[in-house]
Image (cartoon, rainbow, N blue to C red):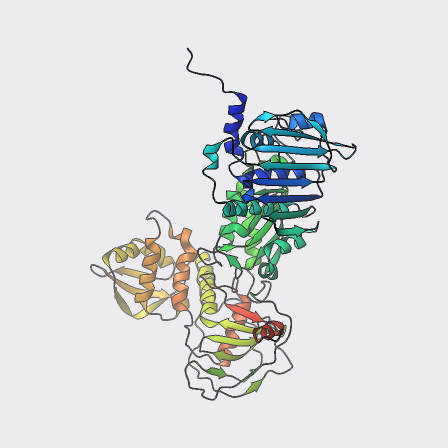
Length: 589
């Protein structure tokens, strides 16, 4: 007896079904892709029991006659490949595996009618058993019903999540396809609830409809080219973000993908402006010649292999990076919409009371400060209190003119568009320091300020060892240290841009940062993280009172500094409120 045997076709299909259709979301994705490839202008999806009990996909595409219907449920039968080279694949599907895989694991029923025929045909597949096509009634297009998913492969069914979870995954899959095909009307019903019902629309309208109001307000158009590659779509201000990457829609040549190359590029582009653990919101469409990518990487077809992945990464990182690099209040939308001009009157009866409002007279506009400030802003002047009214003449600058400081931490200003601006002075100056140090570093080295008297800092021996092992690299950042006995470090100089912070807390924070790095990892690879630690210690602290000139200087530098809409940790540095938003807070709207 031979030890090797050829498996039956039914068994082969059931094995393949586990790879192609691992959950209801995968099945509904394949069915909607077939509808789009068939030229549908409207697709309707209905789910029951998370798609496990029943899913139905109806389209108004070209439809299939009985002979094609019989072939469509056979393995590796497809109308979508014009040759066998797999070079220029222009359709979403092409492998010819989806329908036979679904039919092998579930109960599949298809009714289809070509647009030029007066009747439809139907066919059924249950657990791999195929019926003959029969005449049926039906509108032009195709209607596919899948029920009892994985009833024929119980080992797979027991690994499914609860219906609500599976339904959420299926809804996400349909949303990705709706992002990819805005020219097609989409309707999704789940458990009797309409998740969305969208008409055919342009990309901007489709993205706005699916992302939600908060993201729509912060959307920034993307349009960049490199060679034959064209990147379009929208990214959101880092101030509007999510706890997961679920709000990232990536489309390549009309195909929705979850591709590691693109996701990595997005992560790198936002790394300097987004808080760790948060994820940006993007809807990006990349178009490039079909021969420049391989879509036949995995049966799910959500991963790609780019011929020149470095060029793709460079295009994405560069395009997003340029949009995020604008100064605060210039090109980057603020976390709140700005439409109307507020009326502002501030008064403090106790000007010396900590936590009160320090109201200030408006100064003459200071000259615009291009570039980055080298030293700390002066912090010595005491403000005084008085009642003021914002004059009719507005500052021409995006963040406007400062009018008050609240809680000795937040600067209030009236912007050029007549909105109310609230600035976190510590977060804002932290970004200014970050960019100043980073620019110096990239230009060849950070300028140092020797200490009049070197400081000795005692640390745990492990922390001191980590810092001393990086003495040369830290020196390039303007921090000059040397050993001073077990667990002690002598600090001879600090980055000049930081002013005169206490060396102890700064070294402890840097030691924590280095602890998260491998010993063989170059400091340059975590440059922004290390600079962020430095900048935090050199920035204006909360609780420091500023005079009007200092506040104005802070606003002007924010407008001139890249990525100043967020601090080094990714939190917003300023907020804007329109008259409408203020009235909503008071229940007037």
